[in-house]
Amino acid sequence: MKTLFCGFRCYRCGAEQDAGFGGYVCPACGGNLEVRYAWPEGQPEGWWVDEARQDIFRYRALLPVADLTKASPLRVGRTPLYAAHRLGAEAGLENLWLKDDGQNPSASFKDRAGAVALVRARETGAAVVCGASTGNAGSSMACLAASVGMPCVIFVPEQAPAAKIAQLLIFGAQVLAVRGSYDDAFDLCMAVCEERGWFNRNTGYNPFTREGKKTAAFEMVEQLGRVPDWVAVPTGDGNILTGVWKGFCDLKEAGIVDRTPRMLCAQSAASAAISRTVWHMQRSGGAADWSRVAVEPVSATTVADSISVDLPRDGLAAVRAVIESGGAAVTVADAEILAAIPEVARGAGVFVEPAAACAWAGLKAAARDGVVGAADTVVCLCTGNGLKDVASARKAAGEPVVVEADVGAAMAAVEGIV
Ligand SMILES: Cc1ncc(COP(=O)(O)O)c(C=O)c1O
Ligand SMILES: [Zn+2]
Image (tube, rainbow, N blue to C red; front, side, top):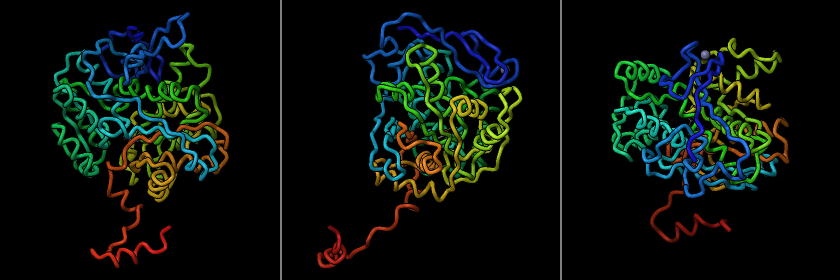
């Protein structure tokens, strides 16, 4: 089935553009754009799935791309959804599921966004794909660009974890390691793309990244056979949260499902711009005039580098997603994030990076506070593989027992182990 993509609508002022619009943001107010579709009526069950494909383009009718010969040959998406009973029990959750997006080609959720962005870039004849990243979005873009021989330029903070910089370099991207924060990298990337006319993949700014990310919602519905009650999302810029929420909304608008989940925004207390705005709006209780809502920047310092963001670039849409879904925002201390890494690993066998561990830490807090109910079906998004940031994992993992190369010493060391 062909794409049903029909245009754009502004998150802030509601202005609409048709599908031929070539810009990134609302020409009326500069707000972020939502991609729109013309949903067909009276379709047979399952019409939205192309069973022949085992990647995100299985949902090609619900994606804003036409020419799949321009897609990366790498398999993006169709990641496992694991029932995690033992881990769930630790938080009193009876129906916990882990969506392991560390199993994407570059080992993070960001491949979903990059895969759609790459097709868009090639469809529009771009010579170079460019982006700013805390590390994962960039290493993903570099990986996917390499798979089709497309030049790629990435701006990252100089302090990004070594594995992410190594990925960027190995995939052959031109890497600009910025002496500054992710926010500085973002602004530099904007200026250079504008000047050079390169395809700008920047999170939040580029409406197509959200479209790739929404495919995780489609997979959850296919894999679970129903819509979950909650989805826990580790959040920095807010684009993953917004994307997953949009996936469920698209399915509902298209008449494929009849309900949507509540979105749990999990952030570090040391990078909590979106949560603060959500709390403020929940306290003030007023129906939102979204054109007046502003997400105030913070000074982010969290150990979870992927969600360390001063000014969230998809903040407004993320706040809307939490509020409109009837969801909640939770923040956790960095110590809880680090402690969550071995918990998920030991409780379910999934090794996550700090940002991803924030989803589990936040979910535990929400369960403890009675926000998420014991019997609720909850999907916790594992957005990045733990090998992305081994230094942080080692801080939480403890030390090995060091022994001499001697059987007696080894036997003494294992005494007491069952
Ligand atoms: C592993 C991981 N988790 C969570 C996030 C947060 O996504 P967003 O910035 O869209 O909120 C990112 C973004 O870089 C990430 O790489
Ligand atoms: Zn607008």
